Length: 253
Image (cartoon, rainbow, N blue to C red; front, top):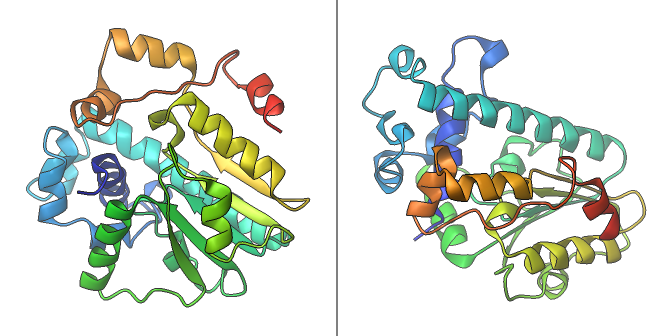
């Protein structure tokens, strides 16, 4: 079975891509082709699982839906913009860690045609994604490599090298919606690997939770994190220290 939280995030992008107002529309139009009735059934328990049955205008006023959809809109646009800047600034490799149903290798096919793209994820989720792409008749770009990895036990360095990663080339890493689900040591190891094995000028964009937020969420579960915990995908890691995590990230390079 694929990660259900990755299906939930893709469902939020898919629903957001139906917005008529372009200024509020999620740019991930491909997500809507990857999320169908079977995927919505796998995320039952969250209001987004009902988007196949509800009119958009009505569902878009449900606070439990619209808050999460807006959050994914902001996150998608922020990372898309960072990707464009990185390529303009000379990045030749794009590494998407815990890719889930990320569609950037396909949506930005033309922008990335001179780049090596590596999607890293657990095998069940990768296989499910390939199945959904085939069903949607989406061709895999020739410069994309799928690399299987369990962040909790596999060596990211070895996984990347086996996928053709070149440590001498400027790289842009995307780590979206992943690190909060991992043990702290796995997060630290991943960040150390990125810092140690990336060429000068490489960059990373990620989202993360704060440790205080994780602790509060454990005491007062609500929202998407509570649903994820019920699915056996609890939030584990929060960045220690201040809200911006500056000291933590500086320590890891």
